[in-house]
Length: 197
Image 1 (cartoon, rainbow, N blue to C red):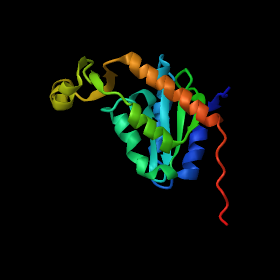
Image 2 (cartoon, rainbow, N blue to C red):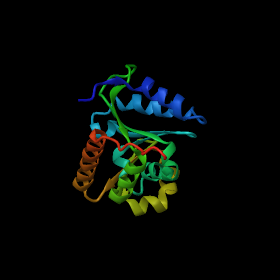
Image 3 (spheres, rainbow, N blue to C red):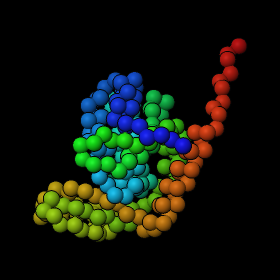
Image 4 (tube, one colour):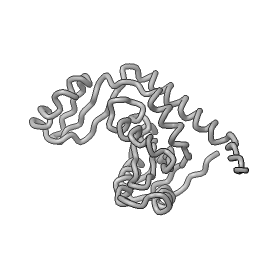
């Protein structure tokens, strides 16, 4: 069983070891993980996080598996540099504002995991928008992708976007299989590289 840890210092350590440029990216990640403590749903507290030589990235795992989301596009973008990436699933525990962000960290093999994301991702059918003036809209993804500027002109900037697949149960099944697969991979012994003769 994985133990709860203080997430921010652990991830800061990874940034110090692995990220040479744009370390300030982590400030955004830190705010996002701390805000997640207040989310009632575990799906909104489960993230994919990576450190690479030029920055960090923190996305909701659920959104990484929806093709049209910015999370999916960003998470799958760095596959060309997989050998330099340290990736983790970060599960934030519920908490209160101002408290330490506690949770669980699960290491991922980014190169393998990103291929599973590409193969398993589903399409967004609808999008829910929370806009600056308090308006919430749910509309077909195609309507959002072509006309988002018209909504913001009327209601102000987009505060939150939630991408929704046509079949939520299908996405939940894919996420469950991903978590099982990565848990099994962590338990398997790694093959040792043969010494050159």
